Length: 253
Length: 335
Image (cartoon, rainbow over all chains, first blue to last red):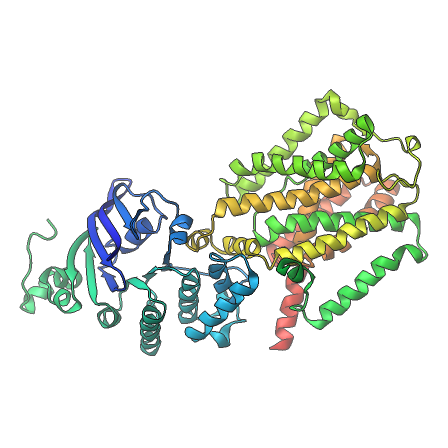
């Protein structure tokens, strides 16, 4: 069953086309990576799907409903949660309080929200940090808290925007473990933007590649990583040629 | 039921805070039987009133981070509703006060709905403007006495009149407002732990993230603005019965709006005790400056200079006010 369907999505910023006629659909219960060089339009695509940007053209269907024109909070209510790439907490919320904000989406009761928060804290190995201020945590911790908070909204699907950026290899290993755990134990469909290839290839069953706002590849991690278009997009045409990889000349024209 | 439990539960504060708060509460309860001057009594009533104004402001301004500088318009609506209803139709305080609150809340929706499309400084400026416009309307509105205002003459009533809140001795007024003061603390104690309270703190943190967590940012702000308004309007109604002479200039001026915001900002915006600490410092200061300095040396307006100074110092050095300093010192000593 398809949980998310993006149909001919186009997003323009004052003449700059950030997303160009992108279409794909995501099966329920899958983990899909979204990769592409800097400026490929990955975060813009997330912002369009989650209702933070209005689309220029196209449609987004989530869980059988057309969410194209819905506000971000209504989309979250339907069960599509997301994290942000650059999220600097400035306020005075502790880790526990931050996750409670997420849990309060599905309940009015403080005690219910607290109970769910405690469960999530434990599942994501955050219990020891629960009384720390979010803003005082290192990047790795903050990223885990934003994930935990998004999970607190009890979503059906989770969009993760670069949760591994800026982390050390052991921290990446840990977050891979958490993503797998979350996928399995909370029954979440996950779509993640990531620059850390090792992580994308490890956790995703399918990878979508964007370049200059267009979808250039879509398939299993093995196939995508061998795709000449992807290689040239990442490494440049010359590098790809020197290393004997085929290049689609028409790519950037 | 859970809400009531949360309102009465202060256990998340350290024992030392609760001890101080307990001693403070006890002092407030027995204050009228202690020897005191009428000046001190008047100052204490002002302190309680402004604590309540500040608590109201603190919901939207402190927890929500929306700097609102137009609260005086709701003091006016509350005060005028009670005064007009009493003088024209002899309607008692306990009826006119909730009606005033309703009118204020309705007005707050009319104002708040469009105003919360604005952010930051633009929002603050717009709140000032709406408040001043309402004041100007009241200054020319004959039904409410225009610029002369409304005078409640106490000789028309036989004090102590508990229904109309007409008393000869300030002690009665003191206990009425003290009752509201304690209710206000319980309410804010519930609010800060409530769903709306958490949503508002998330909004203050980052509005985009708040939206992605399913929070209707605009509606949460409008709702909380209405809560803040209800607080202010209630005290406005009390103000009418206590002062008995309501003029647009006294009740709805920009000074009042700024003073209300300043209570919470000085004491600590976004903390339960902040507005009370702020009022505890500013109100005696204000009374002193007005009564002695202003009268004897002719230094009219010196209080305004001092308020502006305080605003500048807070925003430059400690945005979280005195409570922020206390928390920091505590954090340092515990770690």
